Amino acid sequence: MKHWAQESGLQFRRLASLIYNPFTRTFNYIGDMIIPRSSHTATRLNSGEVLIAGGSTTASAELYVPGFVGPPLVVTELQFDRMNATAGSSYSVNISGSNLTPETFFDIRFTSPESNVSDVVLNWQRGFAASHAVPVGTAPGTWTINGVRAHQIETDHTGNLVPVNATITVSLN
Image (cartoon, rainbow, N blue to C red; front, side, top):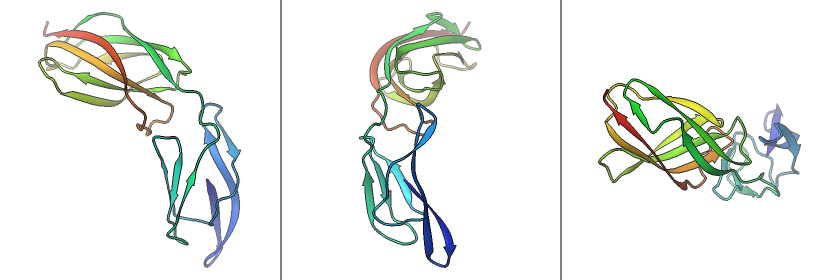
């Protein structure tokens, strides 16, 4: 994406055309945009492409198609340290797969006891292992995690939730 600096009035100068790679934690030159922009939006699409739209100097849009987005993040297993937890306690979860890092975020889709409706928790866990509290007042019964999405950018929840099947039973005491 191109970054611009205002020199005077509506005159702009190209500073850099860079994109951040979260896997290497570096910025890389990607080329020039078609139209100079400032105050534009950049929206990552599900395909990995980035839609650059508008700005103070234009009402047009451009589509950036990355040559390499990075290796796919694949979750193969969720493992709980226990199958039963008491409200007011905690449990630990280990996640394994390929191309995951200690900085990987995981969203989950779950179904609560006696419900047929799935809910989603964004950024449920960061990294391979984490402890999760079971708040007092949590509904007792079997909670089922039926989907997981791994992502490297905290605010990026655009990927698909991959089906999984993991359960934990919550009791009141």
